[in-house]
Image (tube, rainbow, N blue to C red; front, side, top):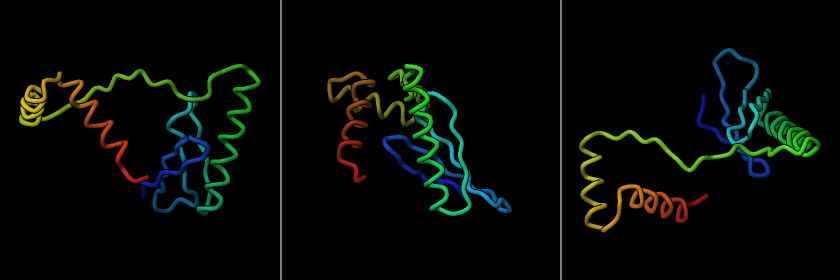
Length: 115
């Protein structure tokens, strides 16, 4: 099982479960450190996630470290040649570079998406 995402104070965690395991496992995806946690129920998992994040943020504050994962703003993207061509045509018709065109599409989608 995967596809479950939890949120706590702006931190996101992907949850996984393998058949036969007693615990569900979580991995925080936007922290500078690798943060794992586990729980046997959703309530246990949420508490373990919150405790892990809170302890990590406190640890970072004590040391003057940035707790959140830095993002470069660069996103390598692989497309099929057919989709790449269609994107080039659309961007040209819009009078934009492909990078600007894709960034605006993503921004529009993220700003209008339901939470």
